[in-house]
Amino acid sequence: MIKIRVINGPNLNLLGTREPEIYGTLSLQDIQKRLEEEAAGYGIELDFFQSNHEGDIIDKIHDARAAGFSGIIINPGAFTHYSYAIRDAISSVGLPVIEVHLSNLHAREEFRSRSVIAPVCKGQICGLGADGYSAALYVLQRRLQS
Image (cartoon, rainbow, N blue to C red; front, side, top):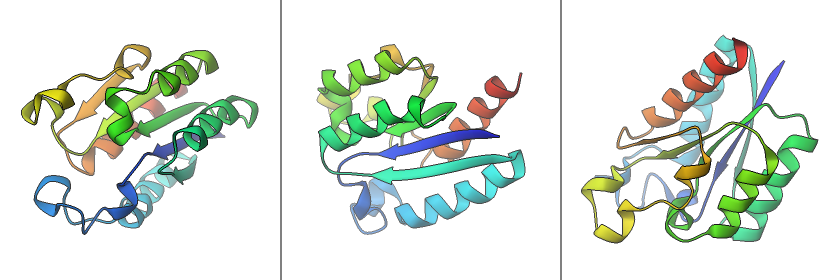
């Protein structure tokens, strides 16, 4: 069975109430439930994790390979723009990773338009709201099942 780890970074625990005009009205739990239903249709097992702490996210990335995960979907939140430690963790595990963002990074403040994570990911999906997670799941399952 394909197993995918879904990692969410800082402040994503506040989805649904945090700036809904930017991030939407779905909570992280709503997104998780929807994605688990979609994953079941593909025969994929998901593991969800959220943390506001960089080291915890790095540990979950490191653990993914040892725990038998086939890929990672990550929304690193603000760590996107400056966490070389998360970038190095992704690079070191050798798993396919899709970076997801609810908002369009390129249509927001200039500092948000650069991702230090993207160069070590298979792709980046941004600006599609919660559907970005679904898109990432679709792409990963196609690549892992081929």
